[in-house]
Length: 124
Image (cartoon, rainbow, N blue to C red; front, side, top):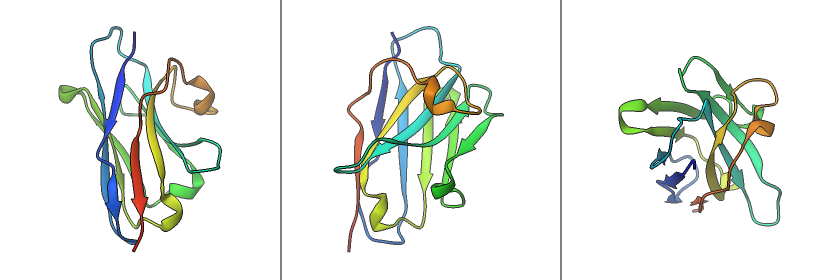
């Protein structure tokens, strides 16, 4: 059973930065990839970025290119999402999820249950 737990959210001013963490625990096998998603109040969940187990395949949604960076530290079983130049519209609950792959249409490759997410609030 794949279990991923998100952390690192908080309150930040517009233009600020946060780094989210997604830590895997207690499961085998290791997913082929992990992805970050978010859901703002009253909106559908949207895909943000994914990274393959090797780290060689990375994808970003157009609306976060140049501001968000995904990375991984396999020694810590953790995938990160560095978020810079945050905007009020980035306010949402952020989730990570295991994926079958990171490539074209990667958001459809999610499997398993959603974790609790971590709240990111961008406000002055």
